[in-house]
Amino acid sequence: ADIILCCAGTGIIKNFIKDNYLKDLIEVPNTNEWIYYSPSTGKTVINSWHPSDRKSYKVVYHNMMNAYSYFLKNKNY
Image (cartoon, rainbow, N blue to C red; front, side, top):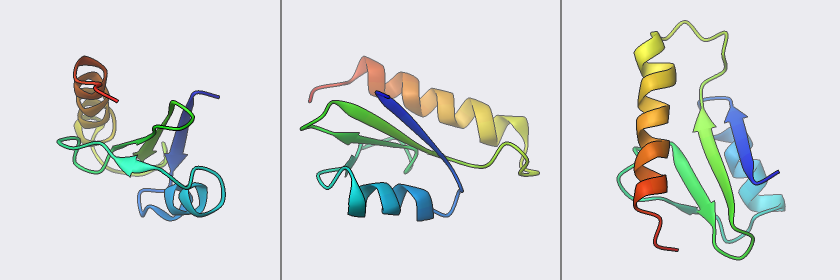
């Protein structure tokens, strides 16, 4: 997969991926800790909330997609 969606919200899954799979994973600036990128593999990691979380649609979807859109428009890696 070129995009990995981590649905924990706490970063535990994203941290596992970084520690065990994408060791060069970096946070993409200005995405509020939503989007991470591995320069060596070109893979993107999205650190999202679980779909069953009771956060508002805006927090769970719009904020994540705004961050991802920003990443795509400003991808200078």
